[in-house]
Image 1 (cartoon, rainbow, N blue to C red):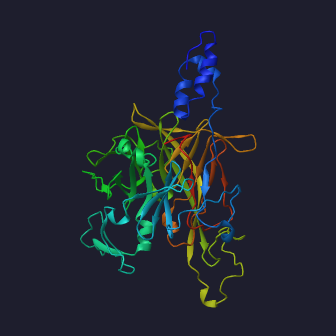
Image 2 (cartoon, rainbow, N blue to C red):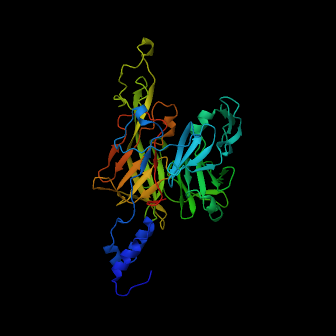
Image 3 (cartoon, rainbow, N blue to C red):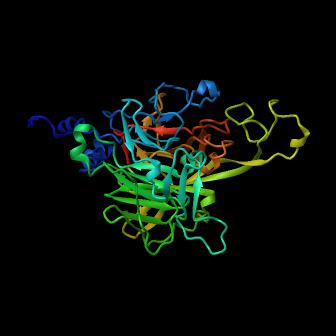
Length: 444
């Protein structure tokens, strides 16, 4: 493009900015000088900004479950993916764990597929025998057991248990390369898995045939809630809010020496009450998102709670249960819902977390997906969605028995601290929904 000296500089800026397709690059370009900052809009008009898509891995008409927002698109998954659970999504790709132990990435829009190393190569798996019914996997415990423990250091587990519990989340650094890009991107693509009973981290690179563990010298174990590729490194956040740095070259992990978040949040180190996510903001700041649950007791005698009118946790009988007098004392299950979120930004210079109350114009998406930050987008009714957190249900421990879980999906508004539930009448949705989004308008 030739520079025309007769055109005002502002017109050239407007021409140039139309060729910027990255939110980060746009923000940096806009911040170049005061004039551009004042004249260019906060939200780029030329970028296609769309709402994140909620992937419902079932026929919602059959299940009788309808979310609050009802714009549906039917996308068919590959036929060779039966009995799968989703344990991640990012860059337009879904990451599934099959009952057969295959870990696969699939793009529901392009129908492309990409295999990651199978479950049998996760570091805590000693052996895998698909013919040993209900004992297909031999698992080693990652922690030394006390002398009087009744647990075995090595035990067997069924493929059903391992599929649900051995991998809680998989995060990818970038979309998998096309065949013609593999040589150029061999060192770029990586995947990390949070695995095992103590939520440890394993990694694989393009071309690897197994997952590789990180060692943590001087630390017994680190319970990771989430992890992120950030500024060329891998960072994890533990259940007690410790920030951990993982070195890909040496396969070593170290806890960063920094104070815990402010004491205004006394429950932040209590893992049973919350879970944590790491997100890179549009401005390249590292954010820690703390999600809190509230728990109530409900009877398991009111069906599976998969969208019925009485799915409100009160244990009311809908006429479909048993009339036997022997069931007077029914087992109670914990029913949970997200109650709030707290946000923290890492002060890199002081090495401490600072509490923040607003995301400004940004939107966060957390849950089973790779945690991301987005530019605001239109709700389709002339309003911009901003300063909120989209979340899905990643409380995998409570989903295990398939009685409650998968229902905890919604939007948290930071401005008034309200929550819009997408499945207000559901108690159990299985497989759990997962957020899906493309890569052109978000910050990983």
